[in-house]
Image: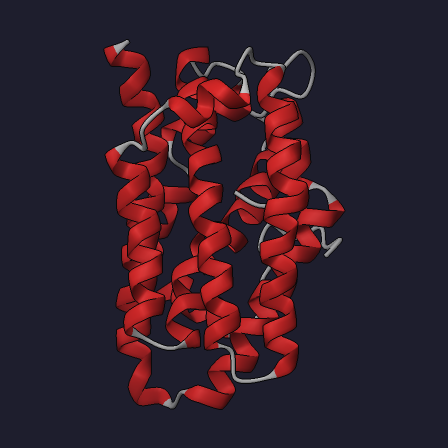
Length: 237
């Protein structure tokens, strides 16, 4: 799902909108960032079938998220926000998808094979939820719907890196953790949280917080469903 240097497990600036949304949805957030899929990934015990299924769906997910950032550019209020959205879309299309394809090749997954697989219901549910939030709402709604993925992955990687239960040696998923814990992705997540604050200041008063929190909670639950999708696929396979 996407590619600061802070040592904290929370990449969002303290006291910002992301912090408030996360705190208001703490139960759903913990179910997402501490999901069994994540814990098993850190411990190196995640079934390979679960990870492969996730990787394929994550590729298809990236296609839709590139569209979401194109929509974010259209919805943006300022040139700077348009540029940030355009950079994010270009990074997905020009860099991240290539990196993902290379990473997946190490797991025996070709781009042709991934493109031939239909989107799982969980992938469709989350990506269309995000796109609908952007189409029906404004730039702030779209950024809030994106935040659990963009900022959440940074937090998950930081938590795994700090957790004594995470296996650092001979962990087949160690490269995944390192990628999202790395400086590049942490910087991207911090910038996304900062943009959320900027747009919130321009577009929202306190009366809007409850609706934004519901949107954030919905996106967070769908993220947890994305993890569960991988575990369910492994059990069924």
